[in-house]
Amino acid sequence: MNEDGHGVHDEPLSGKHPDVNKIRVAIVEDEPATRAALVQRLSATLKFELLFEADSLRSARASLRALTPDVLIVDLGLPDGSGLDLIAELSERFPALATLVLTVFGDEQKLIRAFERGARGYLLKDETSIGLVDAIEQILAGGAPISPAIARFLVSRLVRDQPDSPPPAESQLTAREVEVLRLAAKGYNHAEVAKLLGLSANTVASYTRRIYEKLEVHSRAEALYEAGRMGLIDGSHD
Image (cartoon, helix red, strand yellow):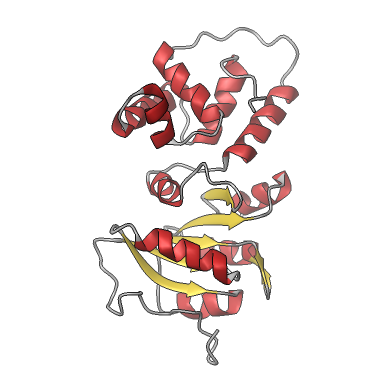
C-alpha cells in the first residue's frame, strides 16, 4: 500500500485511461500471490481493463473515490475488515457495479450474507472448475456464478429439505439438455462440457440458455436447484 492509502495500482496497468470498449475490472485481495495470479489471468484476455489492485479495505475505498469498475473481485478476509462491508457500501453507491467474491470461506452463512449485501457471484479460491473469465461473463449476462462445490451443497440441502414423496414434475428438457445439466451439476464449465460431448462452446452456451428459459431461472445454482427438485439430478454427485 502507498503512504497515501492507495492500493498497489490506482491506474490501469497500461498506464493509460481506461478503454471504454473493455470491461473494467478491479481486484481487492491481500495475498500477493493470489493477486498476481488474478492479474495474470485478466491480462491474458484483451476484453478486460484492470483499473486497480487493492490489498485492504482502506486502499480499495481510496481507489474507488476516483475509479469505478464494471466488476469488482473481492476477498472477504482482509487485514482491516471484512469484504462484506465493502460489498454493502458499493451496492448502495454503485448499483450497476457487479461484485464477485473470491474467497476461502465456503460456508453457507458467508455465501448468504454476501448475496444479501449485493454480491453477484461467489467463487472459492481452491476450486478451478469455474474460470475467472467465465464467471465475469456470467455476471455481466445477468447470471450468478457459484463454485460447483457450493452449488452441490446447496442443491443437496434444498433437496433434503423438500417434503417426502414430492409430486412428479414433467420435464420439458430434451435429452441433450438434461445431459448438459447433469455435467454442469458435476462442476464442469462450458468448455469442459463441450469437449466431453463433442460440441462447440457456443452450442453448449445455447443449450444452457434454453435450459434457463425452460426452468425459468437465471443462474447455474437456480438451475441445479430446479433440476434436483424435478429429480433430474440427485444432489450427491462426486
